[in-house]
Image (cartoon, rainbow over all chains, first blue to last red; front, side):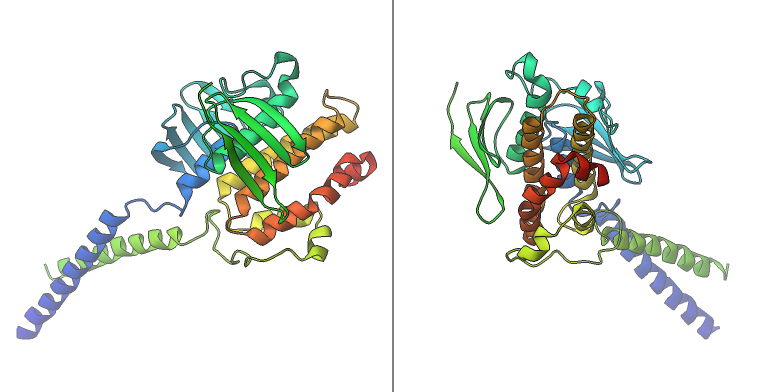
Length: 186
Length: 148
């Protein structure tokens, strides 16, 4: 009888300990996220020319499938498609950029590539988007690319609507450098 | 009545185990695969390795690196695919872009890749930079491009 009471007491203690450990784990990390996930999603969106400096809401929708709300506006579903490509769907404005080759040429996000001239939109837009992404991902402040000057193959100067000018170049060591070369109101 | 504590312990153990699995998942790499390779140590590129890097090698090393997450890789790949499609159109006599413009886009795309990996995998960044010219030599040549 005494043995049985002791056994029950030990089991109860073990269980209490397990409950405590379990609740501590649940409170600390209810839904584990891969490390660096927010930065990863921001970089992915920026590389597609989408302005998203800060994520205000992030929801996991499935395996490699997230809904991201950006402070700049827009809520995007970012996922790996079944064919291994990147799927980005603007949940507010409709299709922004699907991971279908060629579609990106047709659908442009407004406001980021203005001032380039309609006749050179195709090429200039790609160049501007690439440089926009580089400036943003290196921490530069650029709202819209309005002009691009090329000094050499790997040396460009990017002018932004907010008056910031950035020089993007590859140094002698093979690394990419972004220098803010000028700042002022336009 | 005697079974209740045991059942409770099993339930507790189950929840605890679930939590542990979650932590184990979080310890995996950004691509969802177990981290098996460390980022290359900083240092200058080995010139022989860099100059001999072909597209397969480049793709493999970018896929293997832990310097960027899965979505960044997919986004970079999407840009590469777009440029490849335009180059294919150019070599096929279609499309509006000329080689000079495609080259400018290519150079900026390489800079995007280098920027994304250079902080955590500077060796790969330098190798990609060093391979920029030779790789363009393959992309810009119709025959070599067809054989890629």
